[in-house]
Length: 247
Ligand code: NAI
Image (cartoon, rainbow, N blue to C red; front, side, top):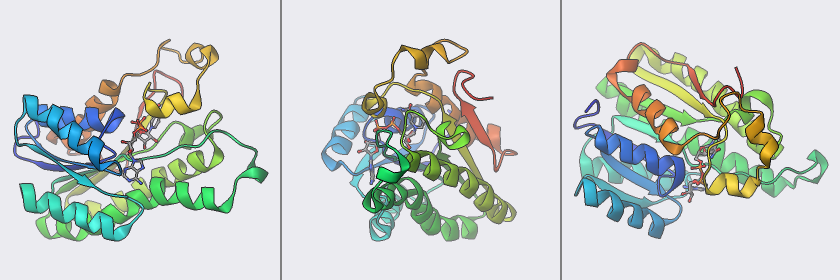
């Protein structure tokens, strides 16, 4: 119970990695706002979470690439559960790989909007509140693709995830004097609806030193650690959870 009575906002939490993080945070004692573009799926996620932790999660429909939506998300979490302690910017999208010359401006705008601005806007809203309280945790979901340059995923994805890694360090430096830590998790290949889009073949699994894809719980464990007092001296870090795919 490392997150007793903490309030967390997790974006993209209706399914996949985000849902696993929300569930783990609840088991560690937190209250969690499930924020997702798919409001119906977010409500279903809350119904599932209510079975084990009644009343300690709530859903909000939000597009993280919209700053007004992000303001509404943060306000509704605070209204429902009290001041937000932990912000997890997990929502992300990916497109199938394509030659650089074929990637349309609209695709760049879309992927940058969700993957990068979807981290920046919630941070802009959370930072002043956390500074005033002298405490706070920010966790960004990056990717191994942002470290090595994605092959399976499109270039837009890798570029935005590399941006997230730099955002982590820059914001960590700025917020450290205020008692706020900022870290990133860089998953490798984790089986979710997102990786179904990428249609991994057997060669991907063979390239992983530990020999298997990751589970969503592996990422949730990393998030719970970074959100907890166990990681109070960790900031600006990227936690690679990738089976050795990149080291
Ligand atoms: P997923 O596709 O299963 O879930 C993503 C969730 O984000 C969905 O519920 C979706 O509705 C929501 N979402 C999408 N656009 C949104 C928006 N504009 N506003 C709010 N919510 C939005 O993906 P998965 O696999 O759970 O990925 C979660 C994060 O982990 C992403 O940032 C992804 O890039 C990252 N990641 C995933 C890896 C994997 O192998 N699955 C590997 C490396 C990083």
